[in-house]
Image 1 (cartoon, rainbow, N blue to C red):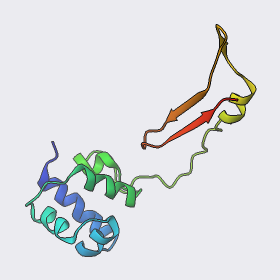
Image 2: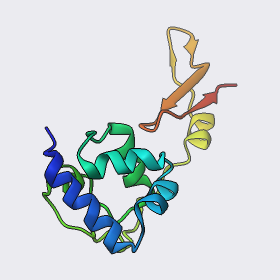
Image 3: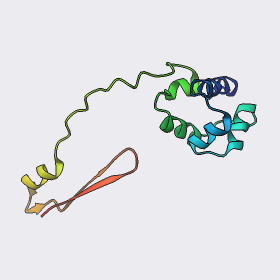
Length: 123
C-alpha cells in the first residue's frame, strides 16, 4: 500500500525538480488539474493510471521510488545500453516452414507487453 503522505512528498519533489506548477504538471502528464490538487492535499490517493502517466511522461522517475521511496530519483536511465539485435522473424519464418503430419503453419501472432501484437502469415 502506498503511504499517501510520503507519496505527496515525492510528488512535490518532482514538481520542484522539473520546476513545474501543479497545473503545468497536470497538463504535461495529461490529467485534470483538480486531480493533482486533490493528490497534493491528501484528499485522493494516486491511481494506477496516474502513476503510469507520470512514469511515461518523465522517464527519469523510477516507479519504485515514486510508489514507496525505494530507489533513486532521478534514475540513471540516460545511460544508453546497447539493445540486443532482434532476429528478423518474418525472414526466418519464410525460410523455415515446420511440418508435422503434413500440417504447416498458417499464422504466428506475437503479443507484446504493451498490448500490441504482430501477425506473420505463412505462404
